[in-house]
Image 1: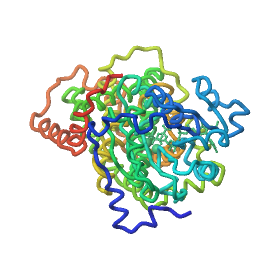
Image 2: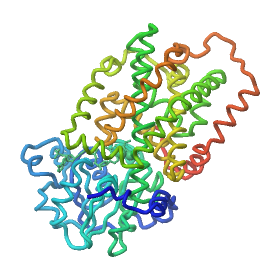
Image 3: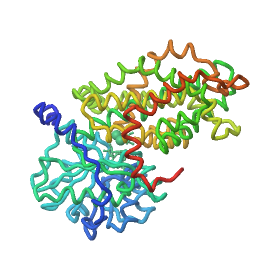
Image 4: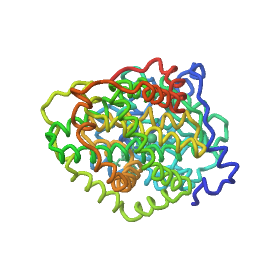
Length: 490
Ligand SMILES: NC(=O)C1=CN([C@@H]2O[C@H](COP(=O)(O)OP(=O)(O)OC[C@H]3O[C@@H](n4cnc5c(N)ncnc54)[C@H](OP(=O)(O)O)[C@@H]3O)[C@@H](O)[C@H]2O)C=CC1
Ligand SMILES: CC[C@](O)(C(C)=O)C(=O)O
Ligand SMILES: [Mg+2]
Ligand SMILES: [Mg+2]
């Protein structure tokens, strides 16, 4: 199998990368009807499998799970997830031949094996769905001609797919039909019904392509969504401890700080997150973010280039073939970091204090969101998609850190995202060494400017406000958020 993207002509690559249409909510007027009464079988009951299945069932669809035989025999966690939630579970042989829609929610590294095993069992004219297009785009999986191949990719961890649905909202979702596999022309209607069943239509759906989803998803997860949150957590914690801030306080400020400050981001973009700071702190965060953008831009560009060329996927697949050696070593290393091992202290931190004492964290979020958005759009990814993959999803990932720190984030995201997160983190920490030497507790750990005059230079403040508000991520974001009328605070 060859990298599908690399087999396309440049013209076709650009067309597929740029495929992205924001769908009007009226296009979902038929709700889940295209899948009503159809038999839906999900392969795998992990982070996405369980949570998507719960939403689909609550939306009135007929969902069951198929697991590999060993998982059923040994009553593994996936088996418990499904049976404890009263879903029917069966082997591939028992359930796949009955399915109208087979949803593959196993880890990307297993897709070739899993699809190879289920394809001969699939009904003629049935549909195969993915939530990430890696297998199709990076591995070039070829699917039987009579089978329709669709993608419904929530731009969120599985846990938040469920939490947002329960709040009456949803998560932005990219849907696509593989151009090589749409024999009956029914792919789009089914993908729309599936997105409605998971709640995606309430947050925003983009009609996109497998290619655009893969290249943007890999970029988001490696940089702002997971990589930079990991780097920022470790560096900020170490700095506070080095400067004598109580360890329990430092641990708590970071663990819950990302979630708190990015809630401001989700509701009102970078503008609102920055407006939560005092004027002097806002100017400081702006200047720090500008400095961070200069330092980190080449690294963001390298990640995008490696994703586009296929170098990233090739090297990660080498690690798959090597029994995930790098992934497992890096996971263990993360577990040993001082931040991870220091429990949050029993101290109270008010919502505003997370902003006032976390100016550096605000600067990191601003720089990372803007850089990810700029790098993606410069590479042909459309603004709406880049917005979901940077600004909107950052809070959804931050929610997982609030639960159990980096361990939880890396457990909940896909193995693919986890691998890319460590790659970025390992390259980013040394890049920020000199920058971090200049950082003191005024911007991380203590209230910025406390006890000082709150005055600022008006001209500078006007320039800063203008730069924040006119960035393209804010322009696109304001438009997209206007249609997120069902968004709820956490
Ligand atoms: N994690 C996330 O939040 C997101 C994931 N995605 C995509 O969703 C898909 C699923 O990822 P994710 O939910 O993280 O996966 P998980 O690792 O959480 O779950 C994997 C499930 O697949 C089963 N499984 C593992 N290996 C095999 C195998 N060889 N054969 C059959 N079943 C297997 C596991 O069960 P057992 O080992 O017990 O058999 C488990 O139930 C991926 O394509 C990913 O890129 C997309 C958006 C976000
Ligand atoms: C951010 C990581 C992700 O792409 C996701 C949760 O959207 C993943 O692969 O887990
Ligand atoms: Mg994603
Ligand atoms: Mg991903």
